[in-house]
Image 1 (cartoon, rainbow, N blue to C red):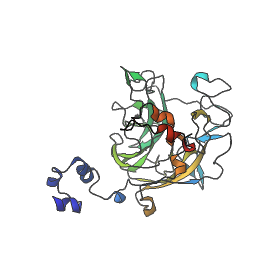
Image 2: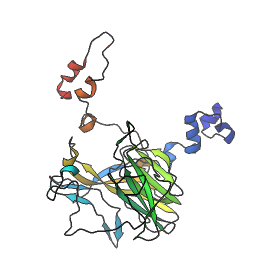
Image 3: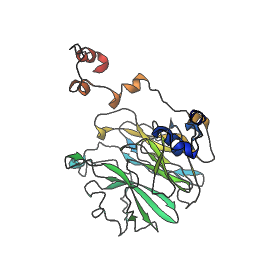
Length: 337
């Protein structure tokens, strides 16, 4: 058994005697060192000329990037005025980012999709963040379902997840899958065709956030890798995303939104768009994207939500064994203001 573990090449008989952790390594990860995994990558970031930070402007939520001729196209939400919560919104104060257009474009989900009757996602918080992948000649729309973290029987409800609806034509009707949700975690989840199936980048919200997942059938997703510093509300350049491919090639770059500074109130975030690169392509491999374990500077650790505040510890911090309490002394320091 010792030689089996050291060689990282367990036989089928050996696998029955492994710990749960080692069995995942041998079975789920095929006994491969993580940098040899096709789903292993880090994400690196760079500014985007013309879409970067601008005082008083919000740019966020880019669409899938498409290329026509020699030009790349992306649509994104834009706002140049303060926004408020939905309960205070009116004609002059929007509740969220808007698209800068001279007119509003209306669309329909089709007669077979009715959020009011959909049993998984309630109408109060609805659905959002659609992501379409063409597969098997059908249009698969993965979208965010949201129960709003409401309390149910005294416990928090499940919150945000990923559902799937399928149509035979772009105009619908879109029919939700009976197995919904297909991913138990989600916020702005990225999906693209990969090999014969569909890959997903799950960034925030849920037990399986910060993971790359894969489903050969596009429905039954399995976690393939845990990732660090994923793109927020990302969008990829994926030439075969709408090509009905049976052998998706993968992705190497995209856009996402980021913020220059952190604000406690989310409605005054001044987001901008940035570019990210990664190694999630069948035929393009870059060793510099296979180095994990980020280390952060103190500027990052002490900023925004990362920063410890006195109130975070005072209520629940246990006193020292000798009865002393060092919190007043520690948090009196300017670093903890």
